[in-house]
Image (cartoon, rainbow, N blue to C red; front, side, top):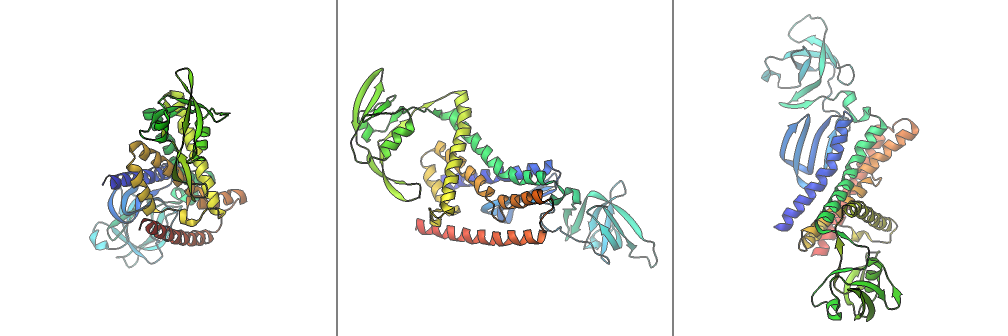
Amino acid sequence: MNTVIAFIFMFGLLVFIHEFGHLIFAKRAGMLAREFAIGMGPKIFSFTKNETLYTIRLLPIGGYVRVAGEDPEIIELKPGHHIGLEFNEFGKVNKIIVNNKSKHPNARVIEVERADLDHQLLIEGYEVDEEESEKLSFDVDQKAFFVMDERETQIAPYDRQFASKSPAQRGMQLFAGPMMNFILAIGIFFILGIVQGVPVEEAKISEVVPDSPAAEAGFQANDEVIQIENSAISTWEEFTTIVENNPNESIEMIVARDGERVTLNVTPEEVTGMNPEGEEIAIGRVGVYQALEKSVLGTIAYGFTETFETTKMILTNLMMLITGQVSIEMLSGPVGIYDATDQVVQTGFMNFLMWTAILSINLGIINLVPLPALDGGRLLFVGIEAVRGKPIAPEKEGIFHFVGFALLMLLMIVVTWNDIQRLF
């Protein structure tokens, strides 16, 4: 049950932060954000606030912010349509009744001759009940609603649509989602630094695991490893690299303890690890934890440096996947992430927070890859438009994203099948 709660919390947080970035910058640019959704599929909860419908949906496979103009607009009024009009206190149309006009006895029913709800915001037509009537013209409020099947949908004048904004505004709205994932990771690492401290650079030990090779060799808390065999070392990374490369081999180490040099011999036990190519290999482990320290400047730096190092690691693995050095079988989907989350939750809340930060960075990077239907793919089109001075035809861009989305769904199925095979 703890894993289920942790997974729902983690998924909700990552998607919420990502989509919140899209939402905030859409609103800052003056775009009409029609819907803010966590999850996909059928709605299980919804409410409307400040023009936006907020929904939680059944399937935990993502989320989205639906901005006016990204999809074909809801309803197109054509000549000959009979519609009902209701007016606000300023005499402007604030409701356009598309059907079920009998349920709106106060609506003024007209036959449309011309309607422009993008730029001029007017509707021209004739009274339906009068045989000979003059052509009438009605101004439409910028925040008027279509009413169809008794459901209200706000109109979107062109200046509220995605396409009306500058390439810089559209690019920022698309980039804001991944950006917020990186900001979340920095925040989580910052919290970890405050609560548990920041790892010191030196090869200093904070704790020795009972009954471990280090404990049997005589290592103690606060020991600092300064020499291995005949080579001086000064960092924790140097220490762990030598240990991992020498499973089941006796190693002579010199530690600084209370101002004295103490010589110890330790034999790292063999455990299973992963090489950069994702293959299982034997590595050494002695059973010690790195020392931590608490400082304001160190904590701030830790948030940025850990985010940078994690980003670099994920990008390296992504390039290895692209170049074929790592098999697609190493990818994980929701099932694999759930299983990994289950294992991380067992090790404690702090490790769960770090896992959340890593996944947040991963989500940000994946969304910036210039693939169809992802933020990166859409940013690519905005960038091309900025360079060539005019947009690519919407039909061509639509086909590109549709085909890409289909391929992404196929990849999701393959990855999920691999996850299931690994589990069972």
